[in-house]
Image (cartoon, rainbow, N blue to C red; front, side, top):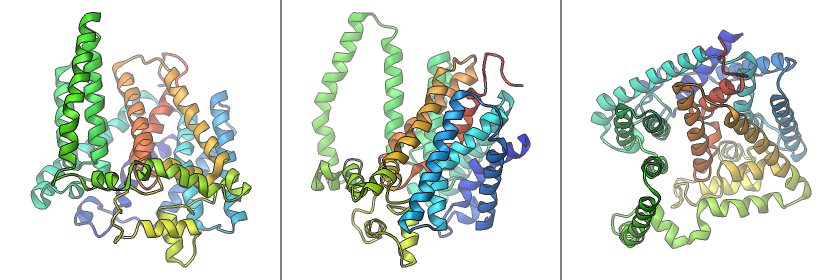
Length: 430
C-alpha cells in the first residue's frame, strides 16, 4: 500500500499536471509525452478513494478525526445540494472531487506515514523534473519560441505553473541563506528568480520580489541597533513616497499594463477580488437553501460551467460566467472576473460548505505550525509549506478559476503537511 501511494504521489504531482495540457499548444508533443485518456483519470480517483476508505477505520489523532468529519460532511452536503438543485452531473461531482482530493490525499499520507526518506525521494524526483524543464526551456523553448511568456512551459502544464514552481524554489533558497548564511543559496535564489521572469506569472514574480526584499530587510534590521533600525525604516518610507508618482506615471504611460488601465477606467470597486465577494453573496442570497448549501458545485464558474452551457444546460450563473470568459470579451484577462478560488467556494457550496472547507485547511495549518523543526531539511520544507499556502491564498483571489486544483501546488503542500503530522517526537519515522 505504501509503494502504491508513493507512486500515486509522484504521478499526480508530475504526470497529472502534464496530462492537462492543451493539445493546441506548440510544445504539446514535447512536454506531454503521453496522452492519458479520461478513463485513466477515473482509475486514479478511484484508487485514492479506495485507499481513503480502507484506512478510514485506522486509529488516528483527534485532529485527523476532526478533519475526517469536516471532510465527510462537506462531501455529503455538496452531493445533496447538486441533487436537490436538479443539477446532478458527472462534471458537478468532479468539481466536488477537485475540492476534496487534496484533503483525501493528506489523510491517506498521514495514515500511511511519510518518512524523511520518502520526502527526500519526492524532492529528488521533483528536482530532477525541474532541472530537465529548465534545460528544455533554455535550449529549446526560448531559442525556438522567443521570450513570449506563455511559450516557456518546461515540462509543466503551462508557463504560469512553471514560473510559480521556480518562484517557490527561489524563496526557499533565500530562506535557507537567511537561516544558514550559505552564499550559494542566495545566488541560486536570485538566479532562479531572474529566470522565472521568462515563464512568468507576473503576480508571483512581484510577490517573490517583495518576499525576498522583506526577508532581506528583516535580516538586516535584526542586526542593527534601535536607532539604526529607525533611520533605515524612515528612509525606506520616504523613498516609497518619493517614487510612487513616478511608478504611477509609468503604469499610465503609453507602454503601461492594459490590466492597470482597465482597473483605472472601471474603478477599484470593479477589481476582480473585490467585486467577486458581493456577487457571490448575491448568488447565495437567492434562497435559504442557496445561502446554506450554495448554488451547486460547478454551477457558478469555470470548467464545469462552460461544459454545462455547451451542452445546453447550466444555471444562470454558469451562463453569465460563459459570457464573461468569451474570447471577444475585452476584459478576458481574469482581472475583472467575478470568480476566483474563494468566492466561487462560497457561491457553489454555501456558508456551511465554505466554513467546513476552511476548518479543514485551518486544522492542517495549525498542525504544521505546532511542529518544531529539527534539521535544515525540515526548516526548508516547512518554509515551502507556508510559501505554497501563501501563493494559493494570494493567487486564489486573482485568478478566475480555482487554483486549488493545481496538483503541482496542492499535493506537495499536503505531502509536506502529512510529514509533520506523522511525527510525534523528534525521532523521525524510519
